[in-house]
Image (cartoon, rainbow, N blue to C red; front, side):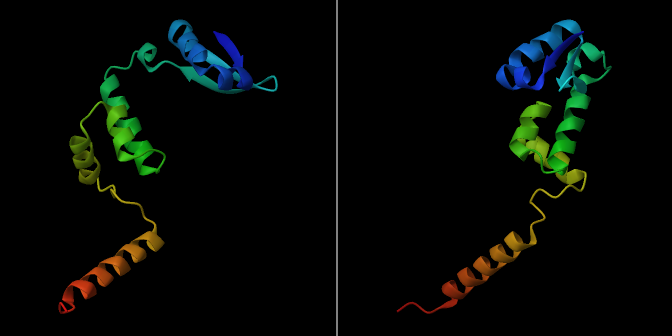
Length: 120
C-alpha cells in the first residue's frame, strides 16, 4: 500500500495509477488524513469486469457526469450500441434542461413559420 497527497496526485496522476496497478491500493491523503482510495479495477478480481465497466459508464451518464460518447468509450462499446442500451433502460439521451427544451421548441416553431411563408 502506498500513500500520495493531493498535490502529488494533481502533479502526476499517472504515477498514482501505476502504483494502484502494482500495489493494489493507493491512499490519497488530504492534510494528513486519508481522503480516498485508488484501486485498479483489474486487481479487484471481479468475475465480469466488462459488465462493471458498462454499469459505471451508465451510472456516470445518468448523473450527467460524462457524455454518451465518453460513456461508450468507457464501456468499450460502439456509440450506437451504447445509445440503444441507455434508451432501453429508460435513460433520457438528452438533458433535462427545460430552458434548452423550450428554446429548441421555439426554434422549431420559428423554422416552421419561416417555411410556411410564401416565396416572394
